[in-house]
Image 1 (tube, rainbow, N blue to C red):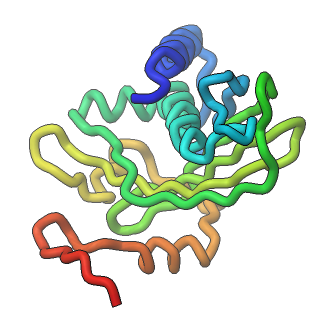
Image 2: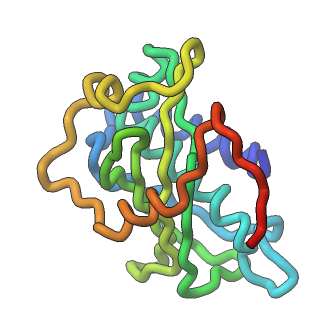
Length: 186
């Protein structure tokens, strides 16, 4: 993992907050403040586009730990894996710039949880990503979404997944691991 030390710090801090009762709801916006470090930069002097996805991992740890979802998953022997993700960049993050990662579960489909994550500086969105994550069982593979919802709780009616996200999730779907997926170019 690219950001192992930061990841361990984020996990430890989120667990401490959770134990102290500084929790958030499963469907609330989770927020974590970070700083762009020299190891995050590319040759253009701004955060490398690949680093954004690693940073978003930190936001998902913060959200799932502080909301108690992480504990629920551990109890069941489950873990999330990213199935697909897309990001749009608006402004660059520079060296030592402080930013906030905002993360929220915005919906589900029959196979995955969908999250909206944003990189925000002083209230302004610099980048936005949509993450589609499958929930897997350590013993039996993919977990049916009905089981996940039964464990985590049914989302509120106000949960909002934009229409284009459903189309995107379908459009980028690859065959199951049990199906062939040859690399063929037109």
